[in-house]
Length: 434
Image 1 (cartoon, rainbow, N blue to C red):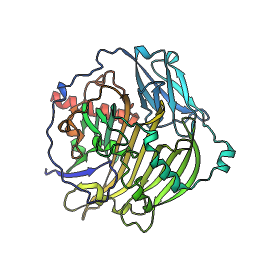
Image 2: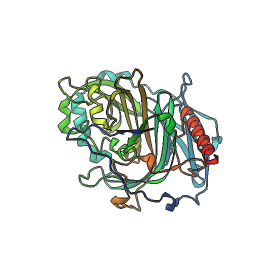
Image 3: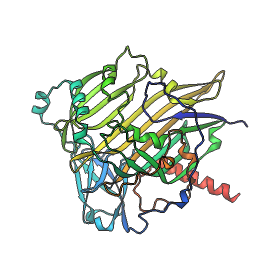
Image 4: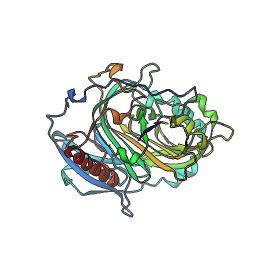
């Protein structure tokens, strides 16, 4: 049966300057030759769930970290986390932060290996602050842009991050790939130095049969995840030149890591003909730092979004972008704000001409920065770095070993992804035994 290729370029932002390139073949490098620098480190693993103290509801995408360090992870869409802590840090504390909640702090010594429940309380903003503070929203964003060099690192650093992407066809997972990424993170004030990302270790699972006649390829996800560091890569969203394309209004105030934060709501102007965004920007009231963004492809022009996101599709197939959601979070560490988590989720309807039924694909990617090193900078060569044309699932090995990640911190799979990993792993073993 002939296989048709559908290539989606995600999760990068729209940049309306002749955007678009064809898929090119890249040279693979041998992942097996890379040895973990942490193999000799002894650690203990703790798992748990972060919930709202009032009602027990899970708190999703909360930042979970070791206080005073750059080690951490995030909760999944079930509010669950898993964190691996080196033995020399077991006397420290776990910190948990999330938009709208006070910081949670728990002594690591009090944690059990599993089933820890950590409650966070909503932290209200004083009424006086809400009434008195009413700034101009566009001026706030401009001030935040001009304050970048004061609020974010001005020197390059090294990062370790965990990245996952999934593809669902209708209700079934047809592809899951994960990787630990080695990252050279360039300065936020440099105009010529770019981030460099390479795969350190990775794994995948695929169910090609469920894809039927269409091979869905998710292009450049692990590369463009770092383009969602919007402070460093403003695109059409935070550049001074792009502000005229949006309408802004104040959305009140909220607490983030016990800091008072303005909410600036935005949407693209009706007269702008190409797709942009609608969402919220969170700005610290004291430093004007952008501490988070949550936004979607604007409903005003979403009907044209496929033109920019679809790199290649079969003749006779129509594709509509149903929704596109982005999330970018930063964490405050020792006087500066650092990228900590990005997530995207897109839903696309694919329908062949003259056929009754359609397929709905849901494509999700998420990346959590799990460690940061300011010394021992290793600006690895460009030829070792990921490219926007790379397809992660073509770069990594199939997964079978449940202890594959060793002492690396990862994002705990939610229940549906965990089940899919198990099913794809069992299917792979059956195929190997046939």
